[in-house]
Amino acid sequence: MNKDKLIVANWKMNFLYNNASIFCKKISSKRKSIKNKFIICPPTALISKLSLRFNKITFGAQDCHYEKFGAFTGDNSAAMLKNINCKYIITGHSERRKFYNENNVILKKKIKSIINANLVPIFCIGEDISVKRKGNTKKHLLNQLINVLPKNNKKKIVIAYEPIWAIGSGKTPKIEEIEEINLYIKSVIRKINTNYKNTKILYGGSVNKENSKIFLNNNNVNGLLVGGSSLDFNTFYSILSYKIL
View 1 (spheres, one colour):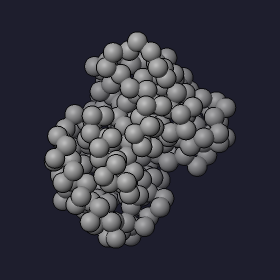
View 2 (tube, helix red, strand yellow):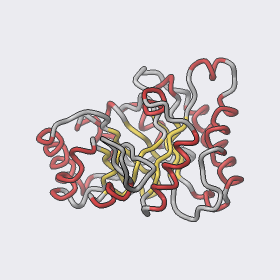
View 3 (cartoon, rainbow, N blue to C red):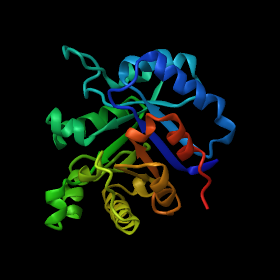
View 4 (cartoon, rainbow, N blue to C red):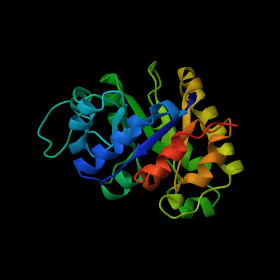
């Protein structure tokens, strides 16, 4: 198994339990041929039942509230998600930033709550097309990183670089661009906290069966955050079973 690569499936708001169960059953039956470490992040409503039935699969959540308990109708805390066998929590996804107005202040609180629950945050960062066209991508990512990541944390975190303009568009940056950005992110987070020197930097945004091979073969891409392609079993299995050259 390529232990240094991490594949995260973000199912977003898709699947009912029966479909999700069939998917997980197929994945479980193929474990011996899977080459990459992986995490599945289903809708919260499905996690508890799936994690009980498929206890050899690592599950994560797609979001959490920053408080442990309280009057927050419809929300779930990191502690609650840990209680249903989550190990990771995605936070800062561009869809949460856009549709729920999540900013750096909120995300800093969320990451703190995830770490305090002894779970691993998968912190998403990325630029939109206007930022890219102005040549301000690195400045934009720097702002997201320095204003959210805790400076004294000694626990594990994961960063996912997802250029917003690539998500669901079928377009992706060239591998040289992704590599440059990932190396930049590594240099920034090491300065924020030396404990982040071995942090995995994933790529996400229109990942598919073909381009995933290019991404995974690059030493500076530590894994993938997969959206739409994680909903098709054959495509996702192809990504998981790909052996690094």
